[in-house]
Length: 156
Image (cartoon, rainbow, N blue to C red; front, side, top):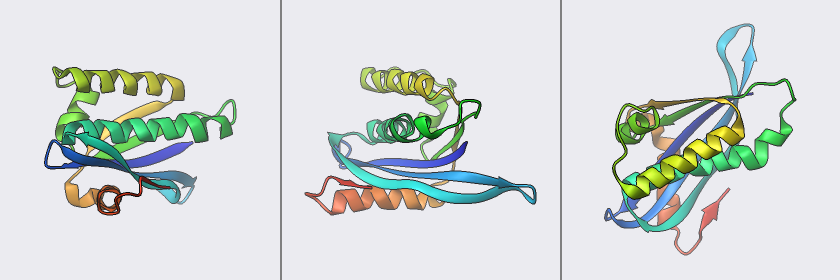
């Protein structure tokens, strides 16, 4: 199974009311194209309370990995491999997840450990890439919808 995941997180006020946005797509490969066709598996926004932008960015990755372990892992064939490509617009978070930057903040370090734990549970090959903000608009829209539609908590 090959998944493409766009995540975003944001806080209004930094710190302030925060939310995450996640778009998970499954790639159906084809002999005619390298990337194949994509099918939306899930897309959602979720409020996460008052926190910072960086914690919201990490929390979006945690939410996506949690979704995989809870909803997709059991549907895979035993011999099937899992490849997950994450796309985020946070250079800091991507570089920390890729081990290029140290994680000094205690809360971010705790979230990094949670990400590593969930990565282990997926058993897949997981990659993190930074993209320009304008290429992450779908995930960003879910962040804003979750923040705008208070008191609703989650959209799936």
